[in-house]
Length: 111
Image (cartoon, rainbow, N blue to C red):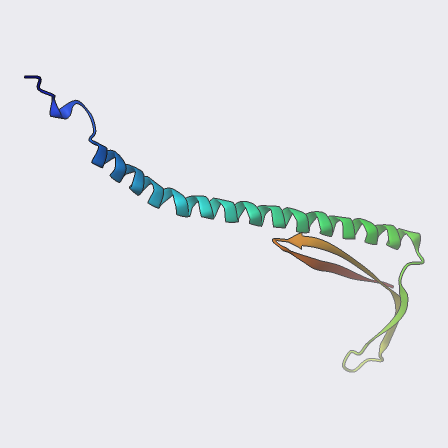
């Protein structure tokens, strides 16, 4: 009669239990990693859009004729109102956030 040693390895039940425990741990961790990656991509898209807006805004500012004419009046207590004439430049661009398009805009006042 041939005898098998019991301590030579893992049983099938032990391996199945280990795989189930590993799956219970890995599924939430992989979901968390995928969500984190998607958030990183969204942040990158937003940064690229804001840099493009800033670059376009700087080009318009350097041209000197950009924007619509706008006047600002500032009132200080006990002093005459201060009038500031200038231009307002507005830039808008779209970027993708997860599954939707989002509009980013930037305004600047040029005295």
